Length: 176
Image 1 (spheres, one colour):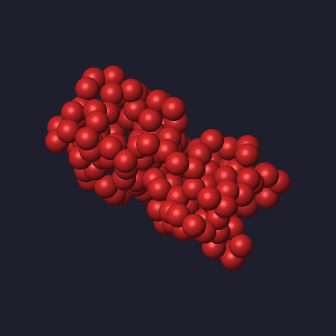
Image 2: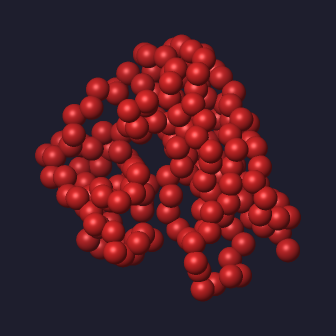
């Protein structure tokens, strides 16, 4: 059995894993590795149906790649108001990044989303571009209202919606 290339488990954040892959049939881009599906406590809606893939889907995206800089950010804020953040993307692949877009990977009850932002200009091999993304706070019903931390994981997607490259993390702590 091969590796599920350029796929990240939304629970343990392992990428390029082997074994079965489980895809949520009701959410966009929510994947679980076999270990997490069987053994781990997964923060996802229990009534959602998952599709099991025993073999990897072959996708030609090896020539895409990227590096976010910085890869992780911690931000302290006084209130849960949407904000903009500037990120740098370095194209370390063989193809340009035109037409790709930033997409959030969601897990947990308090998470960060973003408005879809498409890379319109060419970013050729070895080049860097800066992007402003509009980050918003998302909150599912949660019994523990004392939680003051939101976390968001983001990555690039091809125009066809195939994830690739690095994962970018933002953690926001709301100060009392």
